[in-house]
View (spheres, rainbow, N blue to C red):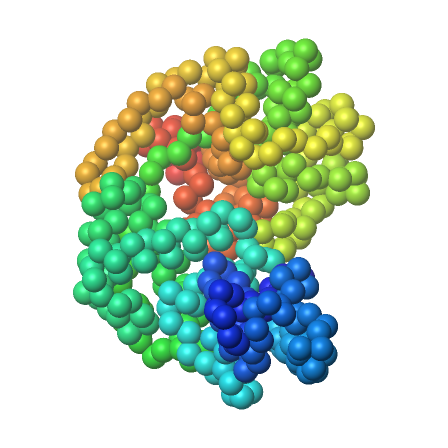
Length: 412
């Protein structure tokens, strides 16, 4: 359940010698909301601990005022709780309108920069933390752009001219093209959400020139002989490395994401007529996948009596996988080329330095493809809905593709 912020009462001027008004304050999404309660009191009769008026003969109506403060606090909490239940989100503009008597506050206008934090709050329950981080980063970039350009940024300002200027600003920050692409993708998502909720009717973001900038960057995969080198490592003296290696190999022979292959339970494994399968609901898509198990995976599962141990965090896993790759002598020189800040940049690595948890999924798709498994069969396992998205996982060189096609009957 999402957090309900706590209203607090303060004195407008705690150092004044006469009466001062009582204000309600509330903090939400790093913003401060202030509301004049209409009540007042002398500072010497204010109890800072309870945030209520002291029981004193000098303030004969203290109990009545405190009761009204209590009612106001309950009223706000009830509104917030009901709003979350009915609408799934809250905002301070809506609260202000409600307290001012506008009970149709769900129609209150939210600016673009005020909407993004609200949408982040809504998304916490069903989107990945990394996605929320991109939302937050986009908001930071837009505020940065607004401040540097000296212009006010709202829904109607998201035009083709803005698009060009914004991309230019991001390029000056020497960001990679695919990082800029994430910002454009997320901005288009926010614009779509705002459009559907009636905050604007600006359709410039749907123009074909308001395009994403995705760039295909080569990513590594581990061919079967390199996976076998990792499998053959003797890691018995390091339990953590042993577990990380085994979980990674399960991912490399099932195509599951880290969140799925690191959370396999006994009940996900079952025997069929001609072998074993994993039957699991994918966390990201919610779809059910049934995956035939490679003998190597069956052996690893039997090693743990089909009750896989929990792995470390994904950050630790990615660090240890590089160590495992180095131990397995997976040290082929790799050149990675991509555009950063509008300039083509080339960097050299040893292959083990590029291994991560996601390399397992990419390795599965590529190795299955090279072994002749039809794309539709692989996609049923990886969960890709389009062949275009799926082909982004196939990391074969031109020479590997030629070798693969030479085995096709067309070339015989």
